[in-house]
Length: 289
Image (cartoon, rainbow, N blue to C red; front, side, top):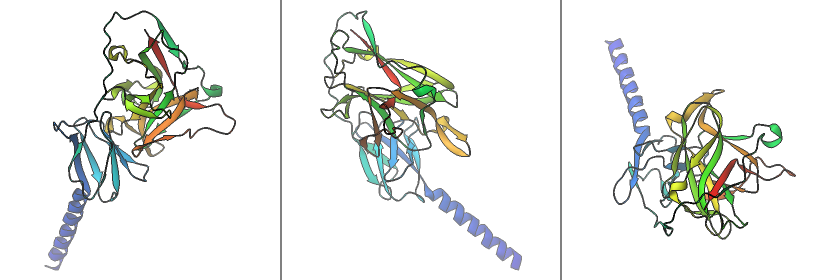
């Protein structure tokens, strides 16, 4: 009888721990405030922490409530940034869509003139491999380019090329385009939603055709941003640490590095050393008329 009672106690403790573990994982869905449409690949940052989440294809992410009792910041292209306390947010989060200012549609035959800006260089800086990897921090890195030279002959964006390196096959990331503010900071989205791009395994230059969007280069210039998706399909283990593919290269450039994290833009080049040339995301623009 004594052993039966002890066994019952152990079973009860196991049940309690299992219940507490289940309760610690809060499954949250992020949706559009007006039509309740699930929002995939939303960046969810934990304020004052170096980790976060990305919603899956159905708008869900799992919050570790045992570890997180803080403020999270939700960001998606075309939506207002939303901050909230984790202990009061519940299982459904609604994002408010921005009023998108559409550019005037210009209907005329597409021209044949094109030019490339800030061409990706080979080899990279001093022949070394410089790349930005991600171990679980929800961050968007962008290169801002003011386009101070005359681009009236080729005022439309034709394509963007990004240099990537991936440890896995078919890693997925989001490409974002922004108009620059008067101060040169990335501001309004030029495309309402992030463009999903697939990176093959290995080192590649990936060209993304954007000609169908007919984006006229804004007066103050534009920025190209890449966002890591912290999803299982992008995860891999390296040196016993969890990483997310792909990595993005950077090179010497006239462009300026910006990082969007925890709801704010920060001008930063974490790899810059005194006396070095300016470095930023390794990408190039192709313009057309």
